[in-house]
Length: 147
Image 1: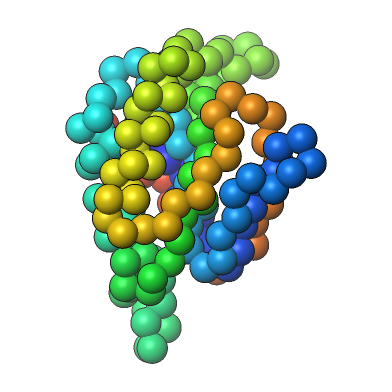
Image 2: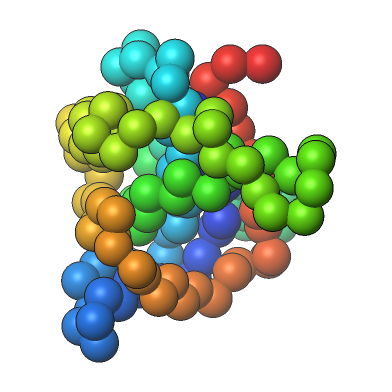
């Protein structure tokens, strides 16, 4: 799995003109799933992300986690994270998992985040979505379950 983590002040996802997910302070997660990902990958990343110390403490040091600050998550499926642009001019998405399997892992990931006491809003899997956020910092980090 590959997740782009963006610290945000506020964020929302809209489908067909309707806001379907919205958060205040927290993280926007763009979540990509590949063929070999399993629920163990989702568990690893859920634990890693909620404990990442990327929020500032009173001394303006990145020393606090999402759990520490009581933040929320907006999780958006993003198969394009597995786009391969090494050849030609059009990305190849062969490394992205098939939709049915990707959705299963994505839903497990979101459930694992909720099990940690985090409020999780989502986009709609497979839909065309408009994602808006105010990136706080800006802070953007990429985390992967396999190196």
